[in-house]
Image 1 (cartoon, rainbow, N blue to C red):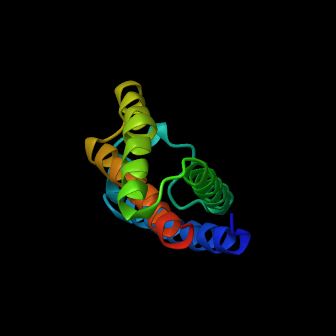
Image 2 (image 1 turned 90 degrees about the vertical axis):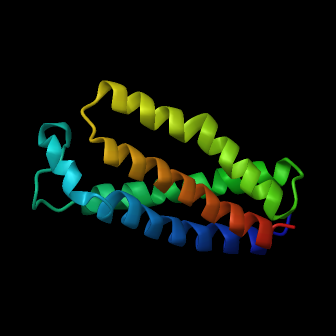
Length: 134
């Protein structure tokens, strides 16, 4: 494995993934978080810097593990990378989000945005993997 390409893919996809988080989890349907304010730890107007940093770092972990798994799977090309991302989303992210929504007060539009956000995150790292890890 070319470690330079791996690090470029990791850093690039990690940064873009944080932007997808910002859009899908922070901007899209943002007002729907207030539908059930008792569910959320933070209070409106309080800084969330610490949580944002932790979530961003977890995004880099997600990207690193995806890239390692992609490399070890001996898959090559965009078709395989997108398939890999879609199957991970279908196997892990989507069931987890839906399961949480069944037990936690979660506005339905947030379920949609979080599901699409995870698909976008995995697609971003799939693009980086297919492009930089031939």
